[in-house]
Image (cartoon, rainbow, N blue to C red; front, side):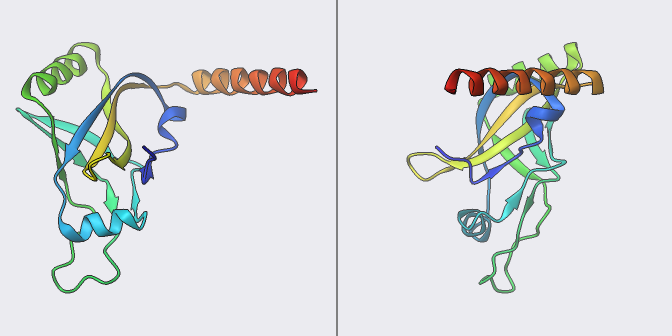
Length: 147
């Protein structure tokens, strides 16, 4: 399942501990816009309010062939998960000081829009440099093995 919209900087900016899939409540023009890859997840995050989860600051571009009933671009979108899962995520982020971020939006085999979310912790600058060094070392080893 390929991501229609992905948060590419998330893996660089955050250390990811656990991932989940959640349904998302969308309007018709939002689905059509997503099928045209018209969305962005940069600077978006997940907010747990009571027994509900909301994706804040995500952008789904207005549908180009939409009429006056087109959707608002940066509205909060409700995520759908089981109450037990939401409660477990809420407890985890409260106890450990973590955050929940969206990694990507995709359509499952049935054609239903889903959001891949992750419990993560923000990396410090030295962590980012360390991960880049490890990535570069891995690439150089692969190049050497190839030759």
